[in-house]
Image 1 (tube, one colour):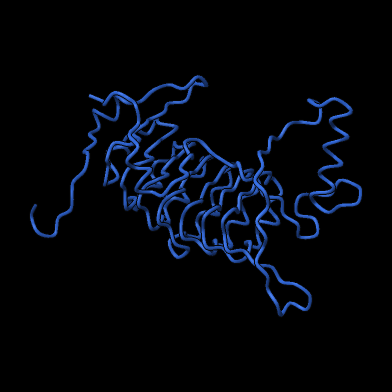
Image 2 (tube, helix red, strand yellow; image 1 turned 90 degrees about the vertical axis):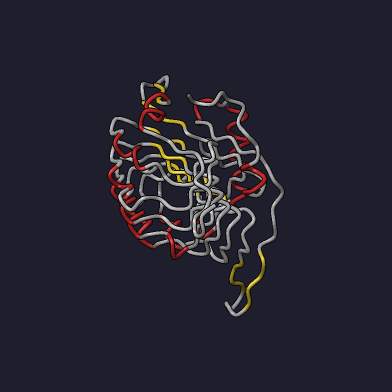
Length: 269
């Protein structure tokens, strides 16, 4: 191998990419290039302006192109289990994006641009399994965000703006070195890990009267409320949902081991 050059990895051409496009049951055009040993983001993909969903998960991509924001048709972007350390500012141009998965990378807080706050259509954001300890305050503008994954990071404190995200229904902060102020604020104490549980969200209309009453009583005990509804951030008590997952985000082992698990699918010709 010539000096100064790393492995090239799998090269994806425009022809290969076009053949890999499939139409989802709801009519969206989805391009799946997962687990193909790709090391460099295929810039030819930016020419596929009709693609709605892009899956480049479980590859070895270290950097996204600065003009990733030109992929304006995207509604769903999955980049989990790569080697990304930062995200370009132009990602803020993907204003139609509803789902973004950046879990299981090497992201640091300095690598997250404030332009993430422009993604106001975002409903699901997964930043788990990275090296983050803070988030851009501009993300307070993500009023449509319903699911936020921050598990397996370096957070000592919950980002303040999370408390004002009124659409947020699922928050996963598991396995962070969280601490909280106690008493006069001079002492901090590690948050005790809670037993794991599976949480399923259903509408009240789907429950019988007995089950509805039982769920409300249990919810009051978990949130420390004595009565009344309240919201999930009342009195600064945050309920976390350990089962939070977004499409293709099931990496539960370290990145190198995960990448070795080859998908059982025929190679694209």
